[in-house]
Image 1 (cartoon, each protein chain N blue to C red):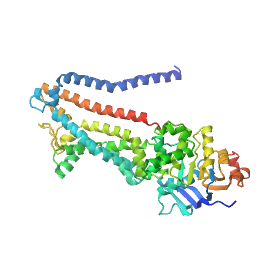
Image 2 (image 1 turned 180 degrees about the horizontal axis):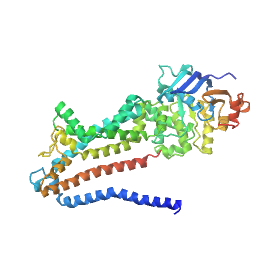
Image 3 (image 1 turned 90 degrees about the vertical axis):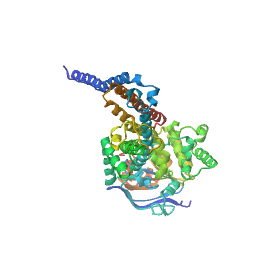
Length: 254
Length: 285
């Protein structure tokens, strides 16, 4: 098997919130069309790192980074990069489902409307395609004009994934996407991740070690702002090299 | 007496005291309202609402006064609404946390506490004397807009702040700019709250007499203003004028005018309460 292309690559990355050193010299390459999981205890920097990948930290006062993040070999923090263009390429799904207080249809096509697309047909097609990709179409096709807030939590989260897919990104960042969901909804999202990795590069932050084991191809363990260990998920969970990794995945702290 | 008995007694005592405090304001207001209504309700008829002011109490009406009040209401809304909302959006969504923004913030809060007569003096200096506009409706509306602007800004910020961070994140993550996020997400979600604040501020402005007297609004205006550049009077000035006359008949007129003014402010407050209620029902985060 030939080695896959590295979709995202961080080199000597440091991040700061004011004086707080949140990420320390991170070096990691994430494979294309695969699932990479970030694990680690709260405050370890895994979410911060995830949010540097689509520059969601830009709006936080006092946040700055040093080092480099490459997306398809382009530096995403270069001065000529437009953040809105980057986010079309790198979609994101959040911890708590956050549908807009609008109709289901308007939620899905929001990203397209933002780009100025008005053609009804284009929007409708994109809406159906994205909802089918997230296995939501059959459940909501008769109530596209109803409020998205009326959906269940699991449906809302799949809607948020559909919304991210509608603008055809190549990378999807997921920040603990199932932490607010029940086990059945969680299973559906995990199945979905398996489906999606055929076409998308997925990076998922999770608190749940079993989830990392189930869904990911590679796992990165973060601790106190450092990347302690990064390996194939199977390797990491059966024979971790670092003692801290071992203690964490066996539940000795966290 | 045991300790827990003592505590329960204190609890009861405070409840009684609390009820007393809650009712004292309401009772005073009720007595005032009843007194006014008894005094003035008989005076309100079509003629009273449609007559021009007069030196003879029985022939005097409040047409020019309530017309002026409506003009002021609409003009102030048109001025304060866009300015206040824009400032609120800027401070809440755009302004970086710097010494300057802290300074602005403190001073807007301070402005909300400046006595209204000071705003009248400001309006007199700036609009009447410096800009030579004269004591006209536009000047009155500008002055009252300055008066309510801090309140509009503060309520706008509160309403915007109530929109969850996650909604903004969701919008940004889909490639929306700051303005697109404000326009498509933040404003629609907070509009009810903003409108409520603006209306409450307006209902305060409608009751102001002092700043308008200072800029030179007249008590006796024998015509209905037709443009914003006409001279004017408003209900509170008319009321103030009538209550300072010695004849009892004018006091009755004043009571009747007070009823009309109160109806206008209650109506505005009612609209505000309705809007807030509807907003709360529509969006549950």
